[in-house]
Length: 579
Image 1 (cartoon, rainbow, N blue to C red):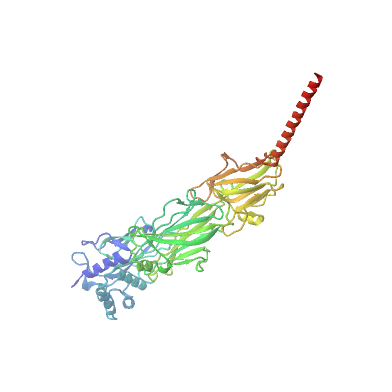
Image 2: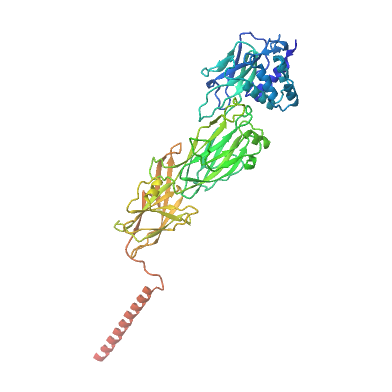
């Protein structure tokens, strides 16, 4: 009777290449008939012992003398297929295999074909792609009512399935996944001749999001490589600034899937306006990075995804079938490969502003990844997906107050000021509506204060701040930290001297998550101060050389000299007469 070794080799190939696991040992010796098991170990983000597995027996038979396989004539349907043999043969004939020999062998199957005949046909499967197709076919035949040979309940120290007989088993992950999370199901075929140990091959992708912190450099340098520089979980900007982001996603093992969904989703708060998704780079763990574009089958949608009911996306990047995209680019994914998606937004007039310690008035941006997580559904994962844990970064902007007073400290109107950032005069928009200010997180307009924010690029505002007798205070809404602002009095009230220009600087610290500011320091010049006070004193400066005042002084002085000369001459003449 023919030793069934070629099918053993085929099943090993299925296990290794297509069906999500890799056997640790493939050389066996004879074992006791009551000592059969499959122990499943972790892989990537998937913890095997927390999952649940069902084992379905596909073929069974009599071990050969060496205990290294089954004698050919003894191969029979396993308990999962004994009532489903016809369905399996039909499914194999309907499937399309890439190898011509495998395709011919499957097409030769008929109603009279035995389990052994099917096993011989399966010997023709030699490629990873065809092995994946085989796993998909068997999965279609397995139904809720199919006999389960043994199970692991997901509650042990190790994920071990205890079996009562040798054979070929289809192992299916039947865990109920929770979302969001980083997890995925798996399926595989394995030959059991004794105690087998396998590693789950299917894993789940992950997502991490970062924001550019512009303290030293206004904008990042974006290149086809892993990002470097001042990226983190927190940033701060002036209203009107461009805010830069990237999303890093990992590429999972997709070998158990026919197609693979991969959708990046992003939600911005009302204080942020999306500009563009600028670059998408595939950065392999080894090799050359590749830029991906919409011509590769990627769709960038600057809108909500109608298929998601519980969230309203600002944008989403749909990779369609990630497996096909990579295949078309001749990319063979490996563990450690990543995709970087870069985009930017504008901090707008609706931005929440912070003006106190332990404040949480920031502008969050949240992202997550939707991905295929169940190869057991038609082998494609098209209908079953999971979401990664959402990752959020935070952008902050601040206030600075100032007031105009006389030398007595009384309110003083009639002054005009400009605000510079570095050498650039900021175009300012006055906020006069209390409801507009409330959007920024400031509850009410103070009666003695005027409010100004930086204009956005497309807005027309003014360059000057003005004070009046009843509104001698002003607040800047939406300033950046670490920037040096200069407040300059361009026009003093009548009969008052202009105050000297003063520098304004804000500094801050955050909690580790970046969602709360733990300290805010404001400096006016070199001194810490809650606000800037600009003092005007009465009096005018002396006019410069050539002014009318100097002319009058010269005329008056000359007249006095002339009068003194006349008096001296008259006195001398009178003295001579007396002599």
